[in-house]
Image 1 (cartoon, rainbow, N blue to C red):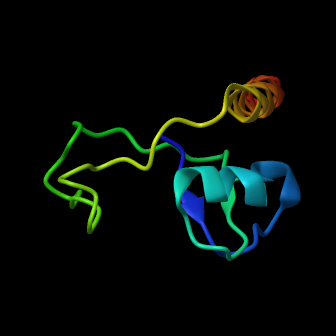
Image 2: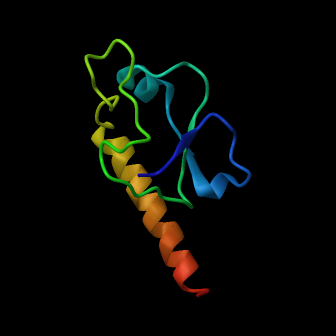
Length: 88
């Protein structure tokens, strides 16, 4: 899972901004947010560090990303991974 933050990325190449429309679809706040592409979190779902979303009947997730936005994240992540592998 890629982390999401309200903090603007230090380098725009390592993040993708979540469009307002997608944030509304997921029920997120209206502040600008970014998906960070140069780090991934791996954990058991739901893990001990997750809490149910208030007023969401015990749900831990906000829903699925729209396919086009998800695809753009995957493509940008893959592009970054390929670029990093050339320098490894």
